[in-house]
Image (tube, rainbow, N blue to C red):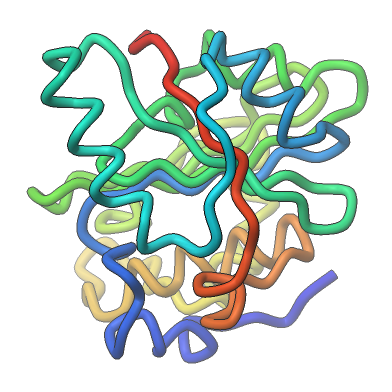
Length: 202
C-alpha cells in the first residue's frame, strides 16, 4: 500500500507546526470528518485552515474546561478522515476507537506527549490488532504483532530489545502511512481544511 520510511517524515523536525512532542493523530477509514466528530460527542466549532490554529484552540479549551473537554479537528483525505489532537489523546482510547472500526473499518492512531510517552494502535473491524510504544517497539501486543514486524522494520523501527531510539516518532508516522495509504505532508499541515469541535474527555 505504501513504502514510507522514517526518512519521508524527516520534515517533522524542520517545521511541523508542533506535531512531534504533544499530539495524537488518528486515521479512520470510511467515516467523514463530521461523522467522526459526532461519534466523539463533539460540539462543532467551525472550520480552520491548517494545523497552526489548532494549538491556541486546544490550550484554550483545556484551560476553560480544566481538562474535562478536549479540542479535536478532522479533515478528509480520500476515504479516510484524519483526526488531529494537539496535546490530546482520544485516539488512544479503545472504548472510543474500537467501535469506530466496526463493520469492516480500520482505525490507526499514534500519540506522543511532552514526556515522550507514546502509543501506536491499530483496530480492524472492531478488534484491537496491534499496540506498542514507538520508543520501545521491540515489545508489541496484539494478533498482528508478529505479522506486521516486516512493515515496522521497513518503516524505520529498530526492533532489537537493545535497539536504538533514533527517529522513532518519524517511524510511527511512516508506519501509519503504510497501514492507511495516507501520507501526511507539509502542504497538508498548512492547507488542509479541518472541521473542529470540543469533545468530552473520556
